[in-house]
Length: 240
Ligand code: ADP
Ligand code: MG
Image (tube, rainbow, N blue to C red):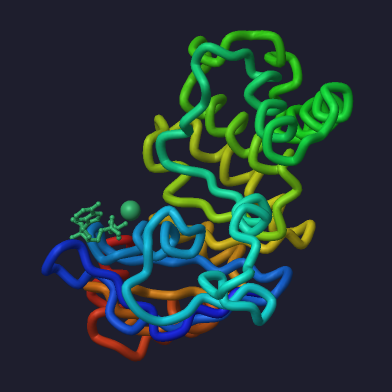
């Protein structure tokens, strides 16, 4: 579905991604692990075009997303994103948060958008909060709404950037459980996370990044049980 080829990205003189290559196929869950500052967020932001690439290519179903004639706006709606900081609209209700993108970007009718929103709010256990203002919610509740909002856009792939890192510990499990359910239903996901148990349990493929390169990648067993690289072993020791 997505192929990242020889991707490079710098901020001013600092190259933060050096020659990144990886693929994700339909139905896969790829988790990206690595220390803070290794370029994980920048990689996700390049994939959904929140950042400009300096070099290399990203292909979506074989088509270059920076190529002439590529439908960038359509692509952006096919690729959803869930952020560490939720980014809900505070002046809108939970339900409205889930409807607005569908109406503005996908041109769905109000009724259609509402039905879709109710369906996904139910899925994340937030239906009873539909008419509440989103400011009143806890972090975990906000993130569940943000996931429902992303699902309402019918994405082909959903990118998660440390979705549980800003949450109180008791909220983390609920959000991970929802993500696991989505994975089991076959949603294609790229997940940046520090939740190693989740990565072990849910990933089809694990990518370990350090200082702007992919040091090692493989199945959860490869990475967690038999890491080949010293840098991977050193990183994982911190989570044992
Ligand atoms: P991670 O998500 O793995 O913690 P990031 O992708 O956020 O890493 O950051 C990688 C490097 O790029 C860091 O050194 C960070 O300071 C730098 N960086 C990220 N975004 C910007 C930016 N907008 N401007 C300048 N430097 C940035
Ligand atoms: Mg980050």
